[in-house]
Length: 389
Image (cartoon, rainbow, N blue to C red):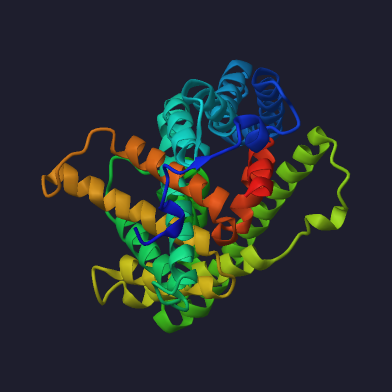
């Protein structure tokens, strides 16, 4: 294999599970109970404010529904994270030997197989592309660090442009179902459509005055569309910042964190990025609408270049992989590709397993944000493994 970290997976270690995964506790049972309790508390601190806000936005004030959502997601993350330690101890006690693969790949395969079906299908459709994008990002980092692949500048910008063009092009055609990404991009690029579908009386009043006072000249409309798009982008970006700030503050309040207030600062990176993206999209669409039927696709592609202002490599890769998976699903339904049973399930398990293996043995090439997330929500297993290796 090219990856040296995937060689000798059957190699043995002289130590036992206590020395490697829970050196502070001699008992596997006691160690895992403590770890499961810690991870579950961390999951509740994460999901309670998150789902409270989601339900408030949706206007869903059902306590039963809130408890169900929080419980399912917390159980999913607890099994996925704390399950690593449990499975590692079980495998050692069954086999009597500690193998390299049982510290990373095998433990994650088993815990992921158990955890993934717990989540709802709607959240599974978000989780799988996320796990796959993190896995691909890590593998690319490993390949680049070993000089098997060149480092391509602005690759993330190109991927975002391609994903943006495909999503915006799809929004211009009637579809029976729109996913989360489609809803977000529709909100960004066509707020009038959102008003028409959800606030029709307000839409009628606004469209009447817009048509009445907008100039007839196409050239004069450009600065108006640019200004309106930028203002809309700023409003969406500021709203996003406020929401994430509230979630962060509530999470810190629940956790009793005494970190400095400067650790989470209010910045204008995302509002400026969204303002540039929506402004570019509106101008390009206005210029190209009578030139080509692919005006939405081309406008989305060109507007995607705005992400070079404030780059999100993980987001770009996630959206690109999401669109690739959507395309593969369409090709499967059309008969151009063979249908694979439990396709999402298999991809999630494989991606999570190899990713966790890289977290243990290749942590220098793992996304720092993802590493912090795992360290926080995995309990003691990752710090102990990193100390040992």
